[in-house]
Length: 284
Image (cartoon, rainbow, N blue to C red; front, side, top):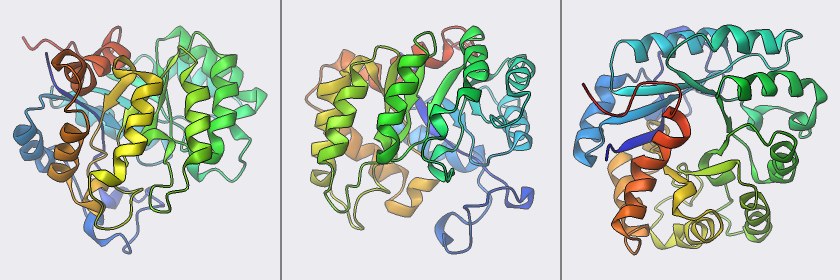
């Protein structure tokens, strides 16, 4: 089975639309492209990826689709559209024509209105996404999880993916409410969860044990058939890097069956993102 990194980025600083990416983030404040990623993928035995947006602009989505078109390593792109635009549904219609687009991701964690997910204006573009089999990637913080539950219930025909476990506060250890909300969210059949982004939520110098409680909880709630592994590269370079995160993930999942691990490290991403869009998972 093909191994898939279900969450990584590339960026070019000269494009100047990464508002969050500043010189204060020195380890990742430079250009990153697929050639930088390939050695990490080779070391981990990964031969397919999902490329995810990192800037809230449609120009970046076009840039990512062009990157993906040039290398069949990228199996699909999760992009961005202006969900606040009056013609948001029409924008979904237009971008859905791009073959390699597999999903869309509003950057909810950066939106000032915590109730943004519950806006009635989202109904039409989200219904359009479901029509085109586009996945909704949810980049949220723990406080957004109850709103996400309501949104998932409103759109039973839309596939949702929870990025980065919903960013539990691992550094402080304050995850009791997060655990309850994850259990509630996992009871919905149309959402899966990405095993990604935990290294940057943990305290500096994190160890595998620091991630165990959160990973075991999500496994118990979602099960291995609804968990997708992603590197969150190059952001993961802020907290140990690709190899350390991949090794930690293998350790955290070591007690699962080989079939379950295969699902998490590729099979589930192929099913969720690539069953009707993107590049096929079998190479020609």
